[in-house]
Length: 144
Image 1 (tube, one colour):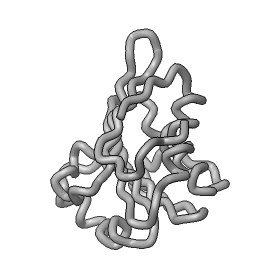
Image 2: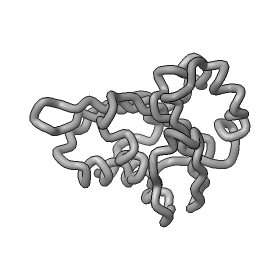
Image 3: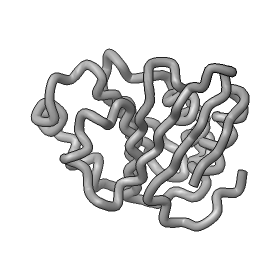
Image 4: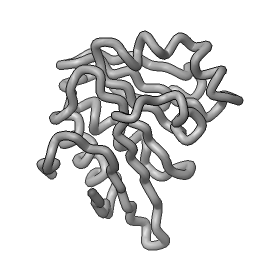
């Protein structure tokens, strides 16, 4: 499934639509270059989960937790050196817990994620728009 976003607001809206469909135990692997829009999409996902708190990139904290309809575990593995470092954070409890996990820079840890992981690739294009590719989405059409 592919979307084109022409603004940060549209990326946020796509994320909100995704978040409204998510269920307990869903894992989203976000991929894309620096400033592609991963955190903006996650902010929309949080809103779709009913989270009112401001969501920021957990680059230095590695994992942030937010609470709404379901808990959101927002992870950023950019600064980790290996998948082993990821597992050493104790992420299994979060990945297989009661909430939704969103992992930025997931390319580094894909081998540690289950086959059911929803993979979202965001590509910034020269005209400023974004192509958002969603793979392994189990819930049919996304109401964007």
